[in-house]
Structures are given as C-alpha cells and as structure tokens.
Amino acid sequence: MPYALCFLLFMLGLYCAVVKKNMVKIVIGILIMEYAVNLFLVMLGFRVGGIAPIIDRAQYDPVIQQVAAGFVNNSVDPLPQALVLTSIVISLGSLALMISICIRTYEKYGTFDITQIRRLKG
Image (cartoon, rainbow, N blue to C red; front, side):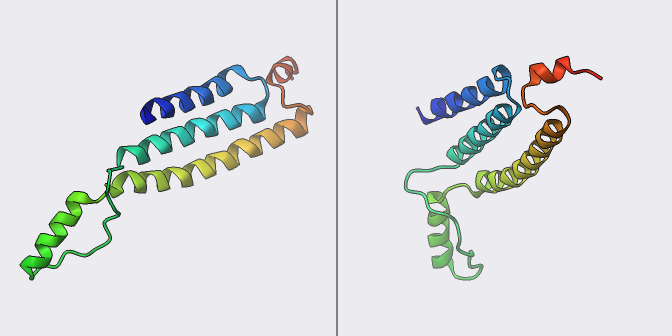
C-alpha cells in the first residue's frame, strides 16, 4: 500500500508537470515527482524493527563479532538513504536552475503562462 501511495504521488506530480500551463506549477509538479522517488527509495531500505548501522565491527573478539552480525541482520540498509541524500542535493541544484529560468522568462515576457510565451516568438 505505501508503494502505491508513492506511485500516486508521482502521478500527481506528473499531472502537474504535463497539464498545467503556469511555469511555477510545472516546477512544483517536477518537485513532487522528485519527492515521490525519494520517498520510494527510503521505503525500499526500511525494515520493521530495524535501526541504523552505526557500530564498528571488532576484528578480534568473537563475541562482539557475533553481536555485530546480529545487529547488521536487524538494521536498515543505509544505501537508499545515501542515495536519497545525494538526490536531495541534486534536486536543490535543479530547483535553483528551474526557478532562475522562470524568473528570466518572466522578466523577458512578463508572464508565467507557457501558451502566451509560445505565441510571443521573436
């Protein structure tokens, strides 16, 4: 069910990006799609009862190695979390680029409506 909600959130963002005529609403739709993908990636690494793996495995003590192995079996996967952090940084850069394009377009044409901008060729 949560994966279906991620898909629904992605479809909502896709609807905003494809159907809306306002450039700011298109940017918001793209951001919603990015957040849906980030949520999906975090949910892939989720494990019920899992905790973040933050201990260092001891190399010499077999008791600590046994405890560490049990801990790793119950911990969540940190790779999707690292991917999401990287994705957040990349989406921040793309958001800055999209907003700057919107601002420059508004300065030139005086509107955010893409249908009017298409008519103002030249």
